Length: 459
Figure (spheres, rainbow, N blue to C red):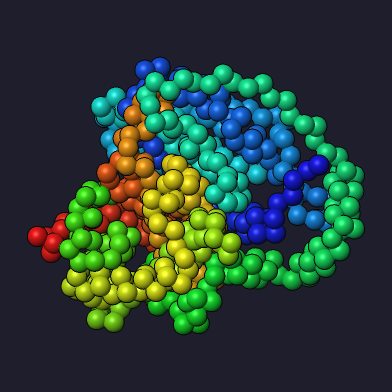
């Protein structure tokens, strides 16, 4: 029995364009494992059994009678998905980010399982990096497991599992796919009506409607009705990306929260708002007291039955970039996010960590899913924040030192911002269109300056 993609998952594939690949990226910087890249490569191979979807690819149903299905890839080749790369000397962070930018500019191959991992050597200090690309179609909830998640262990001497033999199931024939679709229609006649409606309705509109419902935007009706303010971040998106990163000490952010109230997430949004303000000014953009940038902020919530972290909803938040006083910015964002959190039954950081362990790519992918279906006229930038464990993690015995998310761009969105906390530090990843937001490294530098400014107000 084949497993069929949901209508929403299928829409992510249909709406993907060469200029806006949807994969979520991750950059894990590690101490070199004792066995080097060979050990990391062996670890991926050994743990693929924990992520069976990573050996499956998408197959269309003849005549598009139903949504595509997941099937085992009989030609699965781990050497295609796990590749090696090296940086020229001196192996700086800038060189690594140039590589990450190029890798994230290229869409995943639809004829293969929708993920890739690059093992990079040559970083300064003998470090190595793992650069991952995962399509959100693989991630349909917190029960999904990401390849980066299964690589990490709480101990450097965790035993490597023995590879589990794998035999792909035979590929279903076109006739079998058609028969399966017709059987589903007989069991659930409503699916036939939905399929017929989708066939005569513009695909983009259908997917946007589904995504909008999933995003829960009725809770932010005023913002949803009004279009997002003009911003240089909203422009036609090309095929090339630029990735930049920044860091902040988690204790500094907690100190600000303790001094001024709110949550760490409120403080982070304040930092982002302040950095965007200075970035706009550096570009000569008009910034007045009422200037705002609308952010789409995915938040993990509990469902109607009270299951924590079972879905992600979206909140539209107007970042007060026109406010010069950082304390006032924080107060305004704390007020805005308090209402959203209370109404949406948001799940706290501790609950998420206990629920999912270290799964940043999974949660960032869920945020990207929530954003993708929405009209680009409703927001200027996507900002995701995923809490992680505050203890060291290891891959093949090498300690993970840093982890940066790379959240995909939607059509017409020139910038996305991802944040992940780990082992006492918050890591910012900025993914930008190379043409419209080519100076994204300036924005990353401004984030660290804004953190320092907020810390000063807490003394």
